[in-house]
Length: 72
Image 1 (spheres, rainbow, N blue to C red):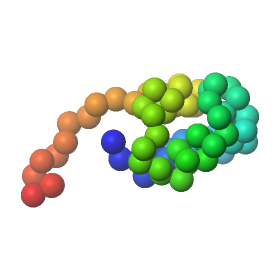
Image 2 (image 1 turned 180 degrees about the vertical axis):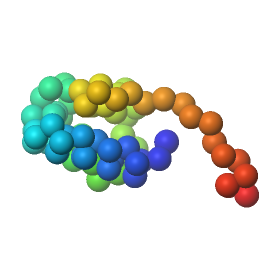
Image 3 (image 1 turned 90 degrees about the vertical axis):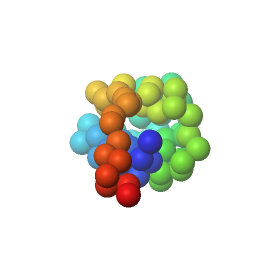
């Protein structure tokens, strides 16, 4: 999971919705600290909570194929 992409996307979606971190936390049922950690790209956030937040901004976490040639 690329934490930087998720963190940037959540922050951009939250701002586009015109809500604060506190409001997003309340709507998603998570703590403010979790939203802050998520938006800062903390790599150890809980996937279930990430999905709760993504759901509130109209997204979901999913598995995508890895371009293995790019990794080599």
